[in-house]
Length: 370
Image 1 (tube, rainbow, N blue to C red):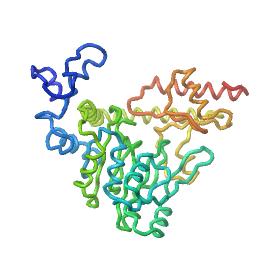
Image 2: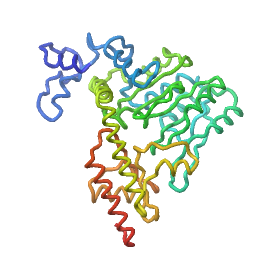
Image 3: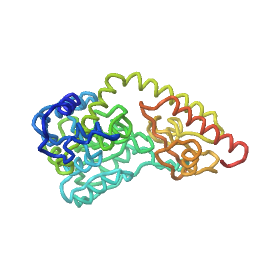
Image 4: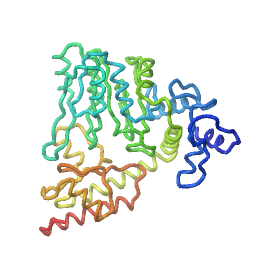
């Protein structure tokens, strides 16, 4: 796709079509973007029913994740969640959904006038975050509620808490219904091939532009034509070729440099957690702590900092990182300050975070507040 876009940009083809900038803005920091920002013209396929360069990219994405089918989403995971629930649960139907679901799942409930049946995650009180969804709770809910048409869970969560998706999928399938997994925060992880639909946000943890996502389909429980029908309802009819070419670049990086970059990230994370483990107060929620709390697993790339002494709130830790160390975290609330890492992070960035955590710990050791 990039090759075709660049070729068009450098050609003398005149654009009597959208968008209105006519690829004529050639100065300023965004000049290069205008040259490849086009509409669905001849030779560039159509996202609503692709059979050319867009379909090739979807096939490439499906192969990378080991899925049977992939749909490109340029309206983010929100589009995939709305489409998946609408596809599987009829108007006024019943959906078993995790209570800690993203707001787009609740939007789908509202739009379809659905009847939600809630399954509740564990709550890790010590850290103030939701834990895993338990398979036994899924089984209990399905066994006691009639006419549920699909199950919707989130794994991993915003903070990186992982549920046992494969086991949950087996249970859901034993009741003859499909499982949708909101894995928006897990595009960098292995995706369950047992889940019927998995939605991933490429932009959250991989090198892709914001709003770039995928809807991945496995097995024969999903009517992909019906799913595509709803994706075309919720997705823009004027898709961004900049976003789609960014998805192509993302897979170029993953396929060519992914193993090396992942290995580097794993090394930086191991060093970070070892350093934080040696702190007296400023710690990070890790796999051992998550399992001790009864949850299934933890994505280490979601760095959840907290103060063991409870003197610094998550928002205060975030404020210190921002103001004193020029580090902008994802969020700070309750006890947790979340820093999201990816394969594109640098050793310098990790070192700055380790130094900041070490300094805060020293302040607390001395009895002072930073």
